[in-house]
Amino acid sequence: MLGLHNWIQFYLKEKKKEINYYGWKKSTLHEHLITIEYLDENQYRKPMGSVFVGSSPEFDIAIYTVTFLLSARRCTTVKIDGCEIQIICEKLTPTEMS
Image 1 (cartoon, rainbow, N blue to C red):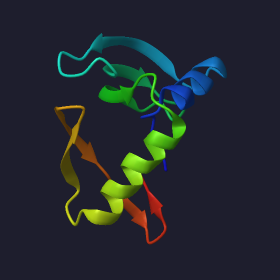
Image 2 (tube, one colour):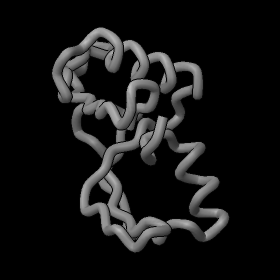
Image 3 (cartoon, one colour):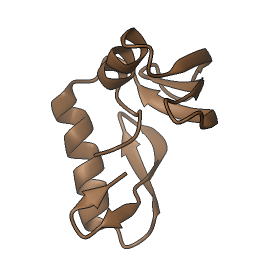
Image 4 (cartoon, rainbow, N blue to C red):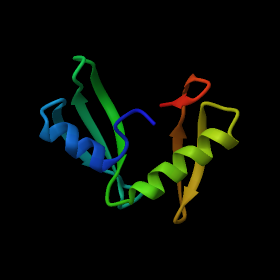
């Protein structure tokens, strides 16, 4: 799984100075979801990305894997704790997702 959608992965990349973090906004939809803006190690500026905060790595892997495997669409709406969240999974190769 690629991308910065896990708070642990984001923290580790920031600690190694592989990303330049510009700030965050708390979601009004869910307490464990924030929107972030950053510049990655390839100098790609991401004006808006989302990160689950406080979730376990197991949860993150499970939600993205299930969404990727069960959905024929790129963008899927899932309901987590009563909150609808859109998850985007992109197939990079037959065995890699982002």
